[in-house]
Length: 401
Image (cartoon, rainbow, N blue to C red; front, side, top):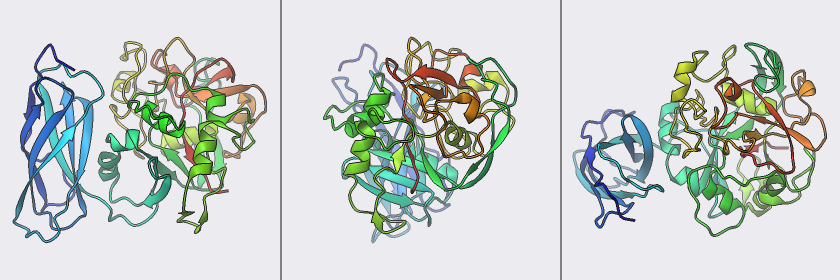
């Protein structure tokens, strides 16, 4: 793919952030391959890495906006603390690079040392699942907001059991904030919530397609392609969820037994909002109640040009979850993330947040889309659509049953 304009990339030598004072990374060269293609070669030096615990991340930005990132595992086994390793990696953006003034910034973080099960990772190439702990939330955000976890793997954040306040801060019309006033729901069990809605690349893999796809959200996902004809309270009978639930290999490391065959699904409205709010109450959006700040957290009618964008380009919430406000589907279709709930009157009064409410040919969606206004993309907003004839976005959840 040739470029009309040569892209100029500036390597930023200063390390902007790291969680350990000793290891460091410095870019020595960034070059787009000629004739101009979407392959960018990155040369860099690392110092102070003496084991396999560290990763280097390179973020490409234009005018402050994140264009993409690539991560590289570092192996310093046998290296002295003062040794300098000269390494290379490549970035393969899935869009046509025609920009000048793009900066490439390096970061280094320690991975694989966090004890626990803060994240569930699905490998879509091996169909295996692992659990990973985290050192800090910022550390995990840098690790998972990379192409690997938007195409070949899926990262899911643990949401602890407990009581959550959802809804509010105001009542509104059904097509904005749905009269969903603040109320408390109980999550009886821990569950895992995907940090991104499914991308085209992930959806294709779950659909057993060989098409590579992209990091944008798919346009053609329907209830039937996701769950088959199964009702909200039934096990997915076909579609990508059945593929996922039946193709996983190995045991769930939590229980040392095969994964529950109906453990992966889509969330209830309450599960979605509890994960999205990340413990925050009384606000419309991740940024608070100031609409002008929403542009940093979501793609909506005020900044999207009515076009979906790659996931992970906006800021996450406090639990490292992205794409909670808009960016779903295209503005000519309903959009939003499908949930298991069919009856909004029951949902806004239920106290059991993990049991779907209502049974019909209709569903409620959360998150809005890139063509809707700010209030329609708020935490509490929800939209009601028939299952058939509409396209939606998909956010995976996992809960041991």
